[in-house]
Length: 173
Image (cartoon, rainbow, N blue to C red; front, side, top):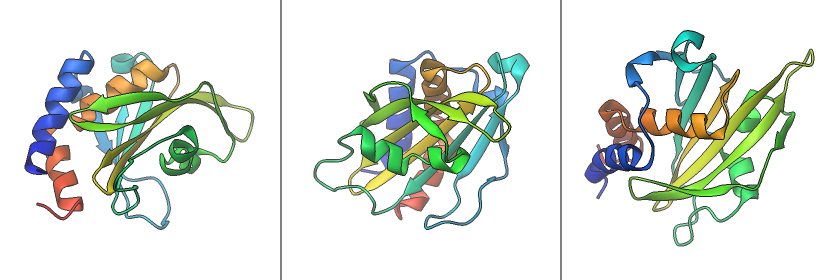
């Protein structure tokens, strides 16, 4: 079933959102220290291409999801979506919304981040379940709202190399 993941993500992203130009996104080094999970993949889009600088962080969390019910609430999204890697000072802007991308179901939630020195930013966190595993993403940007962040995440997940990478992480590639 996982070989269909890359194709499914691509189809789901194309059907649900108008896909951004993926060539505008450049892969950057994973900027976070070690934690309980392997490093993920990070991407940056410059202000000219994305209407404000934006970064997206993707990573699988193998074995973390409830195998029968998937992601069920905002508290789970808050805990697993890696928003806390950006800053400890984050506040949800609204109740999370169900999302589906390529057969993966989950929840997306918008946040307001506060950094030291008083700088604030918008962010979105998403958790998608695949059997007993998760694909999580965090997006932060100067002007990005939740809709723009979800477009960015969907566009990046639609890349064939990302689908293959996820298959490898889930032990199927």
